[in-house]
Length: 587
Image 1 (cartoon, helix red, strand yellow):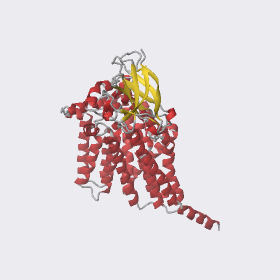
Image 2 (cartoon, rainbow, N blue to C red):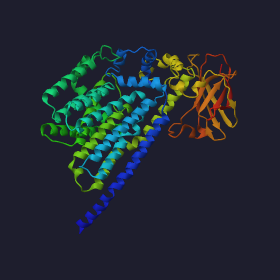
Image 3 (cartoon, one colour):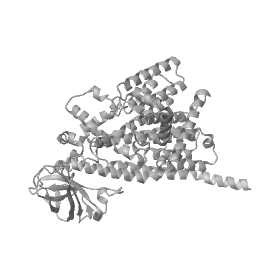
Image 4 (cartoon, one colour):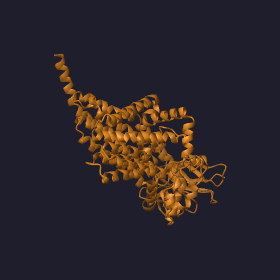
């Protein structure tokens, strides 16, 4: 009787597994929509951080000078980012450097990855429908987590999306093909080539592909030929690589550094790898995150040993997931080695794209391969287990990451407002320059100001930057209020650094803050711009902020001999403006 009641209870719970999985799938779709909204709401135009270092390359191309040597030149001591450089040029040439190309491409590649995972899951016969839906939920969580917002917004980090997508596609074609012929090998290694020319981590697709070719039964002669070709490419790829901050530091000297203090180096690399693979969980729980990574790597090693030595023949989904996870582990090891020269956090946002792919791949591998999940009983419990994994790993960090992205976006917009206003002092450019550039006091903003302005690129192509240096001829309207809180020099030590202004401007008719402002001299010449600030933690539309607590930040150069300014707010019709305030400049 007790067994009968327990069985009935179990059956009732199992009948709820599919509705539960669908409920969380809807939640994942909402998260996906929110992330996409955030990308386009927080997107900025123009160079940012490392991409400032490629403006000179684009300028040369604009002038008709194509340097193949520069295209394939090493970057960051290890990378040859050919594909991203071409993307940056395409964005500059055809889209005025508005970053829509890189943002859209990154989202499209994530959507492509989702389609591949969906296809694999619904073709998989070893798991039930509720588990398929639960895994699909996990796929959406991992691919469109807001912890990836930094990479989605940052044009430079499109390299991560390209390399991981190429890896997934290469493994998909390798294990989906009916036979391992020349066409399959060509497609797979072409994708690996694209990944390698996006980021040096793409090189680690190659050993995994060779292992996959061996498992698919490729002849020994062809396997050795492929291996030698890969070896030649890696040798050519790594020639003349050096660390920019240490020109004498080469691949050989790095190897010596690795071997000279082997125990400490191995310990640091393994510690780094464990935190790297379990991020963002390892941010707050580093020990638990490291142990989880250790478990995943151990399981992965056992899987490959069973495949190679015990002739275990897993399904297509398992092989693709294991291959992707192995690629990420190898890339993580290389990254941890690189930290000997470039100290950086293992849990940095820029590693999220590749780290989350590892966690997703391991979840798929565990569920599909484990006999516990393939059994038809206790489906509800298994569905809950699968759904809980992405919730534990990612859910606590969603709002935090979204707020960090909003804060970052506001800092970039502030610096770009200074740029289009003609204020190029390094203190005004802090929000857009990378940390190494700031430390070394290399002001790329000042260097490339004329080129960007002349070609109307990046923020110079955004409205109302096009109004700069013109005479205000718009009709004036009423129904606005506001003030100027402060006017101060960008740098007190430099009288020509420009002025930074803070204030508030509200449309009394709509009870919303104004988004764009003009700084005008007594002759009605537009000499500077202002933009509405994003309040700390605000994730909604910029103009929907509480008006009485809103502020704007503006900039104007200090080169012109004027003593008084006026602030005009621009209405949404782009044809009228409203006088907000007049102010005497400090002496």
